[in-house]
Length: 282
Image 1: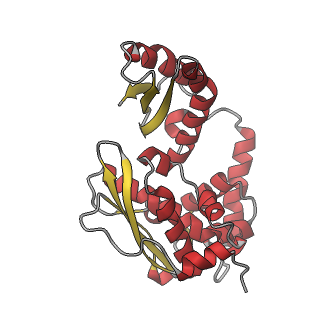
Image 2 (image 1 turned 180 degrees about the vertical axis):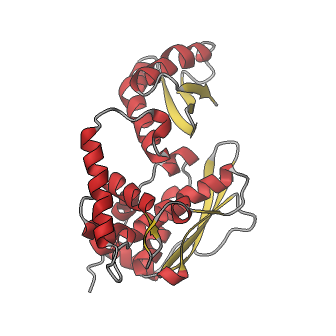
């Protein structure tokens, strides 16, 4: 018997935002019914502010999957796309007061559906299936889990054992024939990581990694300087190596806003992250 928190039980018994949205701006899909879990996420976006104004879901799965999907919709409504894209599976689990370790794959499913929905919005609104479900070598044939998905879970959650990978992706959780292959994937990744200490170029990072790096650099190296003059800045979007930000406070509407973006914000981010970065104000 799993040890669920009261909040998980509440979101399972009284799920928020169940259903679909008429004429959604983005639709993300992950999983399939054959594998036991599937989630379809619908979002409505205010194009002027890039904020998610509504989110609904349809899911097939266990109580943890329903609770995670419900929690996700509550978490992302009102956020900008950039803020929503930074939501991690661990944050979904934390919102619920935690999930049993064997059920962490439900929070991963929510994060992946959100990434697919945001991609759908940026591509015009046609439904998008999470790309990690479609691409790469399939390691676990029982659940259709690819090597890319295993590596993503390992990197994002610092997983080092086959059991942990099973908890976060379900890979290896049925017949077990792929467990040796999963261990080999982990060994290759961590051996390579220890041998190569160089910092990955910004363009090669995942969207979540990019957002974390940019937000850390803004908080550490940019915002304190702007706060000194009564201003601030927030991340709005990232596309490739182009970072879009919004100036706030005294910086908003300032006659020197262009100078601030180019000679302070962009300069600092290039110094800290990658010389190829460019910054645009929205």
